[in-house]
Image (cartoon, rainbow, N blue to C red; front, side, top):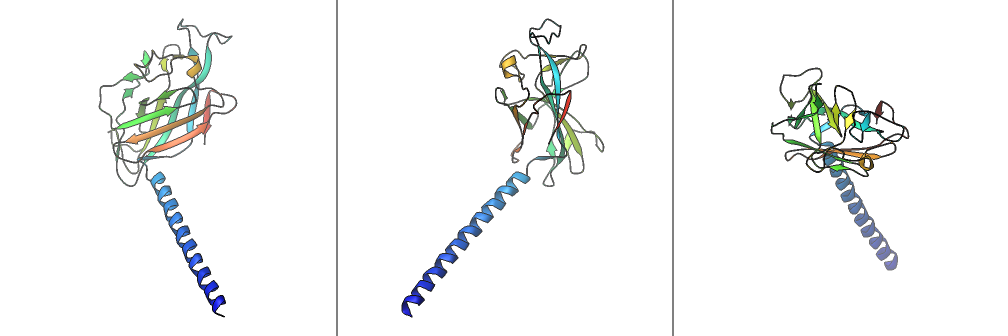
Length: 216
């Protein structure tokens, strides 16, 4: 009887210890989920990737027979504000549809976008923003508003519609065909605003690029 009592007591202690560990693990998992959810912004729809013709040799002619290529040229993310505060989306670039877009802006931005692929990385990517729907005219993403962020991987010749390579580390654009995002590539976009937690989205391009692709 004494032996049985001792065994039962030990078993009870072990079960209580396991329950405590499980509860602690559950709490940590819930906290991790909350940290992920409470980012500065959240996606309000699929990411839209656009395929573009890339003028690799800068001769102002697109030759897809082996000279130039097609690659992912821009990414569009529809964002909505978080319930925990407004987000300053003053962009580092603007786009006016003339000449070459995007155009560098001297405005100070509080939001940094990072783009990483298998062969390319921009720690401060070029992005522009518009506010479709309800908007009070500023660049602050507030609760109830939506913002359409466009991330530019190349500069675009607006007169001809094709894209040009960057010119080295002095700009945030793709510089070579080997860095160009193509089919099956994994792309990660991270959005950081001041001291707010990071918002991150990762997706894989389809096996064949089309002119416009909806990525879940």
